[in-house]
Image 1 (tube, rainbow, N blue to C red):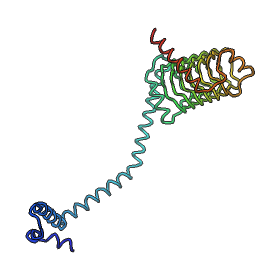
Image 2: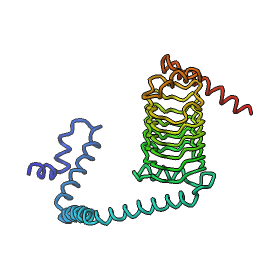
Image 3: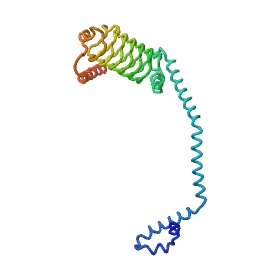
Image 4: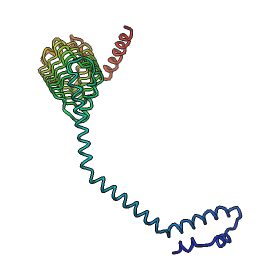
Length: 278
């Protein structure tokens, strides 16, 4: 009530309260705003608009919740369509060289938690592939180019990696039980804490590979491995005489990991320079 009476104050009444002439304009502007606010506050039409606005919001909220199931179904249909297209890309390119869109397709499926067990990406060009934590049980990656790929913690149990290029790949913590790594190129790869139980390592290249913490129980054809400068300190369950043989094969069995990593970096730089000079 006090505010209503105040807003009805005439300009003449307000004018008498102003002590400084320079402030007249500011007080007049304030008085005009008060009058407009007062009259708008008494206009019922604005109240109706306010109610309509609130009703519109309420209807929108109700509609949103009523359509939740439909949106979920649409999202699921879109997800299934995306997965179907990804599998089509992989299957069409099966056994063929090159990428054929398989890198993105495989990564999309894995990121959605889809199992890649039994997938056939043999001979595929997939450098830098990121399949961390992927399920690749019995996957066929024979002859695939997987340089600098991230396969850390991936399940590659019984996978076929014959002749695969895994140069500098990250296989830390990977499950490679019964995996076939015959003639696989693993120079400078990270196999720390990987499980290689019963893995076939016939003529595999593990030069400068990191194997600390790896489980080497019952590995097959280990005497044919190329192992120079590989870091094998603290490997687990290695076959009898493996360490002695590894030393003769110029593997690194002592020293700090940090120092070895520094030497590995120098070696990689020399390899890169040599490649660029060709």
